[in-house]
Length: 301
Image (tube, rainbow, N blue to C red; front, side):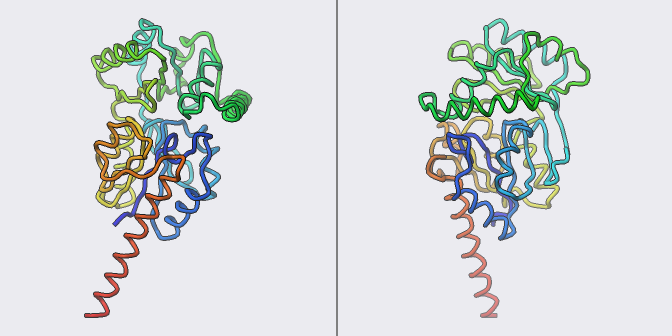
């Protein structure tokens, strides 16, 4: 019986325009009304995820940056898993040697060497490279982040590496070159103490080995006294695999990577077809059937 639902954002809960559809909103709200807890499990930082999730008007726990930061319903930080300076320098050397662009995610902001490249990354992640409306919206989103200080453009990452007040939680690298990404991944695996994943075909997401969605989701379930067999997770890409492997009901999106579909218990529709809502509605239907069956057993006894 599902008691907790974990939802990835990009490619899963969100449309390609980075919105939550009405049907997805209604399904989430109905699940919460029925006593099922919902948690956001995203590769995004809290300060870029919350602006979208608050549309639900329901306080939810957050697994951010693939598990590098965990927050409760009041948005208080429960746990962080930062990358130490030694690991960061080793990773930076790998990306530099392959000439791969990357961003630095800290508990304060996202640091980038090129905002225009950031916009392109968002376009690729949304799968809407040829959609002018989407590009306009993403540009507006980036401008808001620059104004608020949650996105900072810098020509020298060393100042972040050397700032002891900055907790580096994730590095996001992107390249159109598959050979470069392949070589970089192999070198990163050799470094050790890293969780190497991705949220799209053209990127690499790096966090500490203890910062994974599956580990964070298990911790949240334990806090809530919920067995992992009673947890459903929905995702679409490689950074979701660690949680999909641990739950009782693993749901892959219709637009999910083949590796994700291969380990899923079921495949729902795509993120353009309200796949999250459909998965939740089916879980609620099963819950209702079980409750009716239990009520029937009690009346017979």
